Amino acid sequence: GLFPEMNHNEAVAWGGVGENQDPESANQALILVSWDGMHPRVIQRMDWFVSNCPTELAWRIHGDGETLLECLLHLCIMTDWLSIALALLHGKNPTDIEPIISLKEYLEQIDQ
Image 1 (cartoon, rainbow, N blue to C red):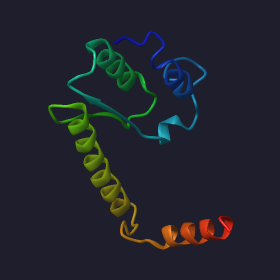
Image 2 (spheres, rainbow, N blue to C red; image 1 turned 30 degrees about the vertical axis):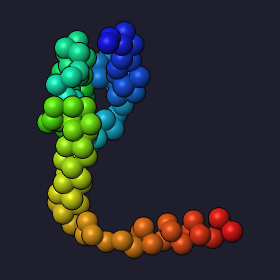
Image 3 (cartoon, helix red, strand yellow; image 1 turned 135 degrees about the horizontal axis):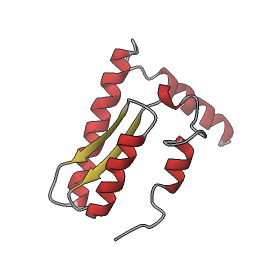
């Protein structure tokens, strides 16, 4: 279906056009996800948003699959690989679990 107010919050928050633009937006990245089952008007909105976003780091990742579930699983795998690549690019170990251990220890303390 159509969403008449779709992208309203994103456009205002990102300040893609005009003088109210977030001064930090150029240092941020935006990833939008799509699939073949989306309404053409929604795709047009996404394309406009990517081309008018105040960052050069804006992309639309397309999910492959015949069903929405297949596309969502494909996108999960793609973004998982993306997070690994970004970690490596930033000199981080993507297999480090110390933060997870710390979180679990914290949660154990507050659950008692």
